[in-house]
Image 1 (cartoon, rainbow, N blue to C red):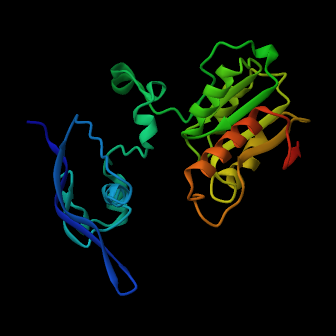
Image 2: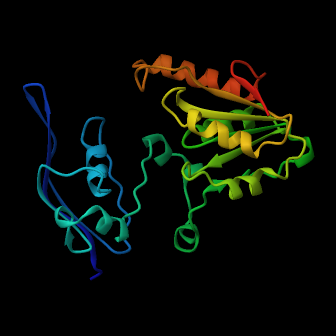
Image 3: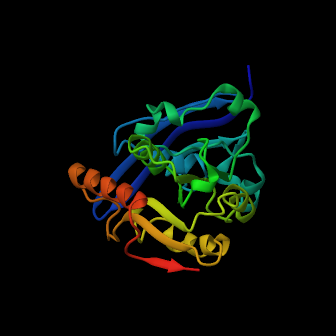
Length: 255
């Protein structure tokens, strides 16, 4: 039997909201062994994020025992946690679990490596490319779908898989071949003030050629992470994807 990497023993996590106690985790117990792949699924509010925060040592349970490589996380200092091999935790919306484009074969998992930047996967004529879309996360698949449906062949899509530290070298390698691209658009599904836009824009400008223009396509700034209505959410997504491929508007910065 393979070695146990993660052991959770009756983990509970409670939050105090005013006079009310919210029980996010109610006695969770399981063991993950070397070589196992585990998917954590559940309805909204079932405690998935709280559990993942616990597994990643970002949160401390109210009670119970969490053993990482046989050592109690409660007894570890922050430097000790840093040198331990952490489990790979992927936060993913449910839609990507059903999306064939978001899957990987076993060879990629066993022989591949983490890529900080993933360049264009389609064979497009580099001399025809006029715009580079840069994004991270789920919105990539919405962009690919729109481009295919509208038969667009002069826009490439580059995925930024690591935000910090910004992978300048890898990004340069993936974008330097599009010498006629004069526009770079950062695309995000989050509201303007909550995604990576304000952090990433000066890094993008640094890698752009002189005279190129940088713009933003995403949801407007908001005090909440979501609009609360599925129809409004879909409407905003449709608009931001169209803006990513359409005429530049709003914030435009020229290098």
